[in-house]
Image (tube, rainbow, N blue to C red; front, side, top):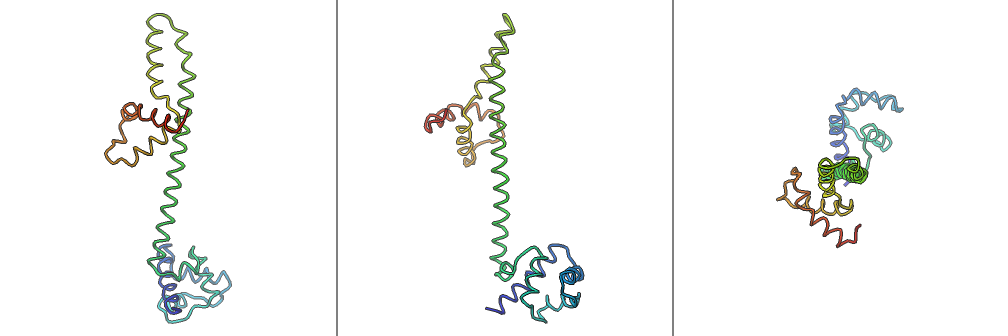
Length: 187
């Protein structure tokens, strides 16, 4: 097991150094800056070839320089890759979740603008007033509770048959959004 840990560490060391586009000389320079006075490019090369053992303190500093930890670097490569992929996916989902929250916030602001706009037709008379009132009625067709829109959005997201680019989708599903609002007691 100990040899596996060291082999995994060495393999990850070379992978992470290459991924960071860092030369062996640059890694040696950084190790020297961290107090390893005799660290050279040759030391890095011999280490990556498995020709010299790695001391624990040295391993810790190498891992820090390479943006990892000793624990991550001694793990089996497949496990480490899985953890890296999981970390990446967490970041993606976190960003998308924030994007959804921002979109719902903008939707709520849009609803408020519609409500603010409702008084506007009173400044018109006759046919102009009728046109303005029809426009208000069309805008009100989009006045759904934000939480119901979020629930509906979750339904639509998992339905692979839906055209998510269609602006008609919201209008055609207005009854479903209202139904969700009633089901969940959302005002």
